[in-house]
Length: 275
Length: 81
Image (cartoon, rainbow over all chains, first blue to last red; front, side, top):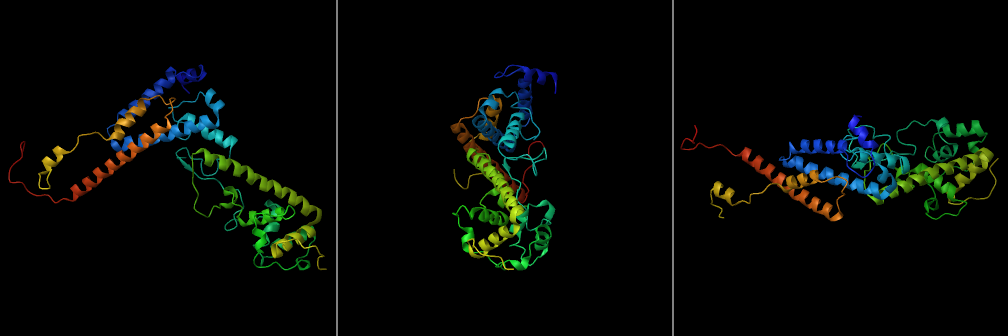
């Protein structure tokens, strides 16, 4: 950082200081040298409008941070296409709303006018299943999608002493009630688990995978609020798995019986396990 | 303006103007960034951007058409040659 910039950042807020004015003038001169190029002028208008739009969003979403910010409105930040102030906004969204700067967005040359979000769910189509790294409840949900693969049963058998033959056969397709929006409180954890494994939660963080075309989001308040809320809900889904894990630890046989019963019939049948 | 007017006459009757995006870009670059654009100003900028982009595209298509035009010999020597 130059001495000028240091002075600018130390001064009181609200005024334009010499360092900032100098950067602004240099930006203008750089523009002026090419200003009679209509294509460049269109790009400039587009960039300024887009940046202004983000400043407005910053002010609206984080008014206190905007008020005390000393980041330059002109000097390029880490993501070179944007000012330091816009970069600060990206960082705030990342810290307070949802992970924005991870995964794909690690290249300083990247343009973030439309951004993708990283999938939080397990990718069924191309990830290797590593049992040790999966929650046991999630693994239980995978049984319905790997019916012919006995590896999951072997895992449960070795870890919890359950036997596949003691359970009703898993039907090839689930009962329609499994996908009902409204579920009784008792059934909700099973429905949520199956939806999670099936990538059918309606939550973008949980339903997208690496294998599909990325869905891109834009910078407007409604989208940011929605992604923030769905990110919180997505984490709650995984939090719920912790409770299911505990139930499996307590009684794996009863849990699996209820889960298979729900998949096959859409309800939890009371009954005894075949011996 | 008639269709049989010479290219020079056609050019002379055209409005003489600078692409509006150039003027707007200059205004925006002079404006302090901390004075945020209003919703109306953003809408206005987006309209000008559309007009400016259309003009760039129109010129580009004229240029392509011009490059495709076959050269023809003139029956006099232009001034300076």
